Image (tube, helix red, strand yellow):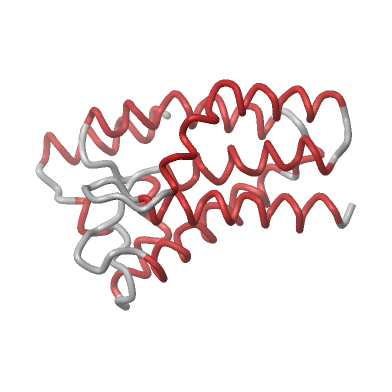
Length: 168
């Protein structure tokens, strides 16, 4: 989380214009955004809104080795970015960690069903209660919020849980 805030503060203070490294859908330069967009935010309010949910969800992900957290995070990070690159509005640059937030939340919910353990089920119920309201953000809407990133993250989170956890 400190890295996200440091990047945002450096961007704002030094006028780096890092937003240009976000996902620009269906363009060759926009492919680099798949790697960088979760680290780049449009301002302090944006990074603050993503910081706490990301911290909580990543803590839940990384405290259970049955989730294969490193591989899971990598699949969600790259898959949600690729999905955003494919379906995103071409007239905007997509930045922020919310696609990863939606992906990890969806993963943890599905993992609670797939793993059939009390621990995973408890985590899934907690995620639904604490963060379930965010899922309306996958619906198409006008404005600067990347519902395409949210949808891509959620779909990839479900896919990752089914792919990673069912094969074990």
